[in-house]
Image (cartoon, rainbow, N blue to C red):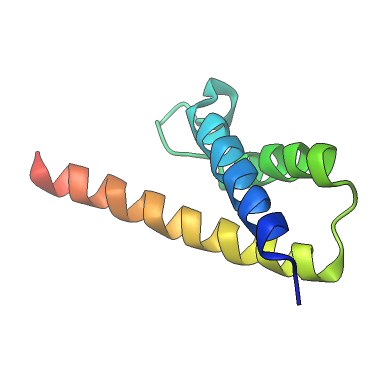
Length: 84
């Protein structure tokens, strides 16, 4: 079981890094779509700088958070496109 404070710190760091990565022009293709592989790489590098090599538990948490954040972002984009 992971320490709740460590998990909270991890999620806060993840969210901040994810936001920076999706706004980074280097992670946006010429057609305006997000290159999720680049976002994943940027976020993973940021998280490893803060937390070191991810243990199995943190690696699982990273994957869950990344998948959730991507789906949330795609949903927001879809909502925006349908509202126009």
